[in-house]
Image (cartoon, rainbow, N blue to C red):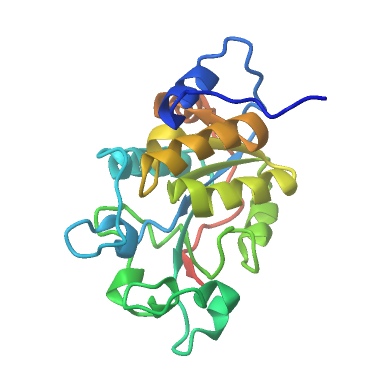
Length: 237
């Protein structure tokens, strides 16, 4: 009877082994992508002010700004998400019941400093969609699925955090929705290296192509560009 494989490798070592496999197959890029930047808000990026913040690659924000600029230049949609809840946190549901501290998820309120997108991000509010999400996946009870249909995309590029939480959940949702899913490795982050590298492995093996930032940037740079859907307008939800 087959048994579960065992290993003495650390998650970091296992990830190095998985991504170096020369026979690794890919979903690949399609014709048009949407870039979805997940929860790059101060609660998770402001290391000096909030204990919930984390950093994996110190150039993450710079990389994401670069991908966002390239996507806009080629008439591909750029979407930013953040989490924030109503005063009584009913919209956090059961997710907001495990703890109730100052730093708990459900205590990020709409308008709270912790819900603000990182000021280093180059958000084009005349063109980009900024979406308030409540659950882990960007696809759950949000307008993002409709935006992807409207823009006629076949590929979703995911950045942000956390790798093991909202990025992974969104990768599963993206694949389930029929999208080729790309995760630029340097553009996602987590609180600890164990869940970070373990979930990079899991996404690579099952749900997404985890690619170097340079690979994703090169695909956008070499793309001929897409015709505009219409005069672009910024929108907040």
